[in-house]
Length: 200
Image (tube, rainbow, N blue to C red):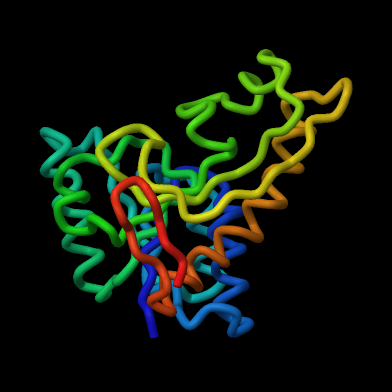
């Protein structure tokens, strides 16, 4: 059984999708710990409801990023985490987390990477007039949303779409493909070859 550590900053809807998939037996894994950089993140309530250990590390309480991330790593190790899942974690991962979990850390992004990395990407997609947007699950590297891509789901952009409407449709797909990507990892079916992820 693979132990997951889920890092969040907000409402935790992807966290919920992962918890649900684990509890239904859809993934040979369990959420071992939830970590938030914000004490008021609603995702912490979700963890509590499912009796999942949770921890809060406020970056402002630490002298630097390395010290902050070392505390996170310590907690992940305590819970024997084999895969770190960023689920709406609104911080760029630093060298300490990468050093310990390179190739064992994945992220979900609400756009079809490499287009529209970073923040406010649904609005950016609308502003650019794209006809198709979507979601991407990728391995985390030192860049911002630049790691090797595991899987993607396309979402059509409709005439007159608002940022909220497009975001909601993309989120539905996120909730499907994130558990799928975790399942592939848990089954040992992912192999990183340069920029590509081979699915065995």
